[in-house]
Length: 239
Image (tube, rainbow, N blue to C red):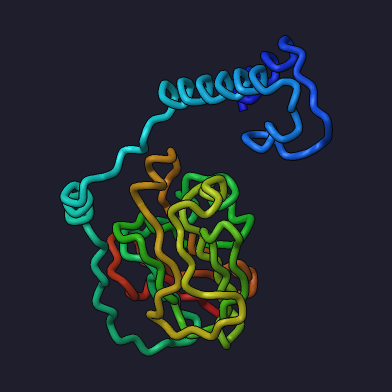
């Protein structure tokens, strides 16, 4: 573009005209019969300027060496699939959807969750970036940002699993949903994967809220605090 602009400026200074409208470039010689040498100079200027600027400014994109790419792939640890224990669902029980450390929802580092605005429950500080179904039920909601899942049980329990604090701002980066609204799921079925390191690098807490959003329908919740393995019974809703 710059070469063409400079050539056009030279053509204007040389007073080049044409006998008709048509294609320029080399074909332009057919319509500039009275300005052949001037037109040739204009083309040479355009070509030279374009060539010199391209030579100076263009750089090849570096290609990753196959050995280096293979080494990087080998160095990146893959999350190992946990062994899923066999669990028989019982009414009113919530089985740990994430492996980690259980804390009361009042200790979740977020005012909304801690105050029980969205319901009572627990927080889990995860050690594995995978979410599994905490009971048999139906996926009642998901988010476009992939960080939260709503699930309902056949006996009417409504549960929210919200991975991380303020992770909505990550706009789905580091999250992968493996379910969709309306899906019927079984306890222990994988619902989501998330990148713990990426969440921390973005400056957010990985503490995951597991809240019974209709906890007012129950007289209380019994919570098992401390370290939990996948699908340990962590909450019992009292009728």
